[in-house]
Image (cartoon, rainbow, N blue to C red):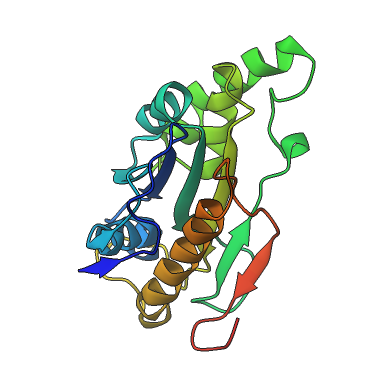
Length: 201
């Protein structure tokens, strides 16, 4: 069992590491596999790891109700080489309903009910962020640790480059947690980064 430095430190601020995705759609299940790997790590008591699968609404409500910050782990197509691991801080301007116009939040909620939350994946990080905005919890710190997929099609096997990226993604998440532990407020380091598995960071 791996122990992360500072694992015995207590705090009222709570961080959620959420593995998301559909394990029946190949590389889309990447986040779920990472969450399962992190389950064997002894983390600080203020860090909670959970496999949310495609339960996007559940994740949004949990984050709004119980957590101050979150690291979402998911497949993330950005045009890079398959297996590339990204750390991305979503921009508030990219989240419908997070601005000053209350009508945008209502519009975002309606879009989610009819769209992203009900598709085959069911819970893209942007859909979760939209929901947080409608719940009045848009101030939550959220980072996305994503992996460039090679294929998203029916089947439970990850492609070779994405399977190989699991260890790298675990290291990235632990790095982010360690950075938060070094802060009195457990703030996440939000600078966007790209990690190529097997290469120095």
